[in-house]
Image 1: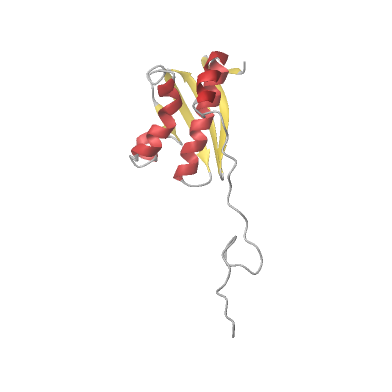
Image 2 (image 1 turned 30 degrees about the horizontal axis):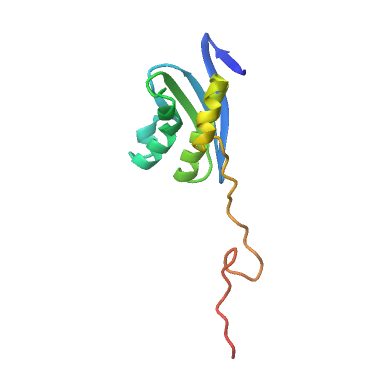
Length: 137
């Protein structure tokens, strides 16, 4: 168990990744506040309920929304990738808190890292797979 302390505050740290996004999550006992890059989760994601619900999903599954504070540093990618990275980080931190949570989180797919990334552009093509228009003459 990797419980860390900073001035008598016990927290559990985990990293979540998705596409180009990397999220460092600190989970600690508290009142259910979620802070993303020094802003509340609603301010950071501009009130988009889809992303906010996506982030809170592991906490709601385990009924920990009112018991745990979450502090996140996230970088890279877009809002969707960042929200998925945060969700994975929260799920991993919850497993650090208690190994009993692993089965229910794994069953709902919250511990699975999504490996899909943007495909690289190939020479002679416009994008990764899109080719220029073919002209016979």
